[in-house]
Amino acid sequence: MFAAVNTQPWRFQQHIEVWVLVVAVTASYIYAIRVIGPRVVTSGRVMTRKQLVAVVFGVLFLWLASDWPIHDISEEYLYSVHMFQHMVYSYFVPPLILIATPSWLFDLIFASRRSRTVMQFMTKPVVAGLLFNCVVMITHIPALVNQSVSNGPLHYALHVLVVTTSLLMWFPICGPDRSRHLGYGAKMIYLFLMSVVPTVPAAWLTFAEGAVYKHYDIAVRVWGLSVTTDQQLAGAIMKTGGSIFLWSIMIFIFFKRFIGKFFAEASYAPQAEPVLTFDEVENVFKSTAAPQEPRQ
Image (cartoon, rainbow, N blue to C red; front, top):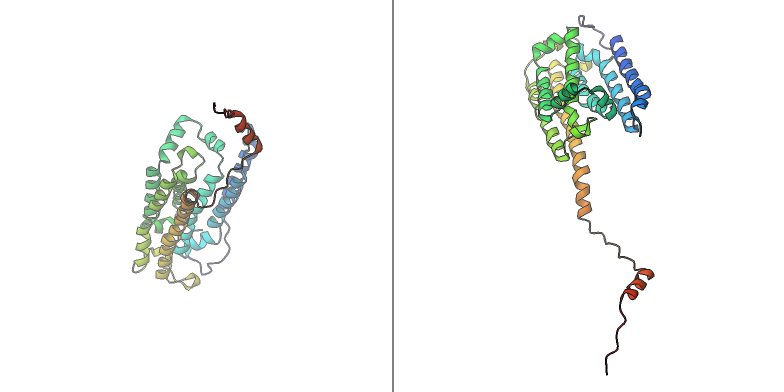
């Protein structure tokens, strides 16, 4: 998989390890829902339709980003596709997996006090955000990138690191433990800060002169993209694509939390007048004393 560059970039390459991973994740989730869930959940549903949709798309994105052709083009020919792959690992797969995880399953996995304490610390917004952005910066170091694409264990370790820190980063937004969620306003500020740091490596890629990553400076050019154009496209995907995604969530949160409440409080729609019933009129007359005649 990490051999010399082939002149046929679109040749099919099988990745059995990816298929095993996807099957293992799917089988584990089905086992948890079908076997463990009914024993743990005494009342209510084991999973919701929203969680079912989330796990389907989460596993689908994981498979597409890890298998042919995205994986092979990203590791051998185009850094822009490599960037797209990391965007899927950072912004699409983690929140879907978190949404798909029922709270009872999360409580079961982190049942011990020690694991729950560690999880609570690692998912603090400051800690999770710092770890996520440190990994973003580290995974763009040229020497590390050039080494990882030719070193299998290092390559997969970096992918695991990206997904893990992304899960921690998304936990305060959509994690299964709702007590750890940020408030609406805090979520918007948090997501805004997560969109700021990637600007640094994105700008560096966009305005760099010459090949930043020597591994991708090869004669075979997929889609006719030069190495400079490939780098600029990677920077655009990182900054524009990531920012649009995060800002779309921020706008959704804003409209969901504030706009609906504003229109409800500022509504000028005419209020319906109360209807007076016969029984209410009769009760009023009964409770009122009869007028006395004036003395002569």
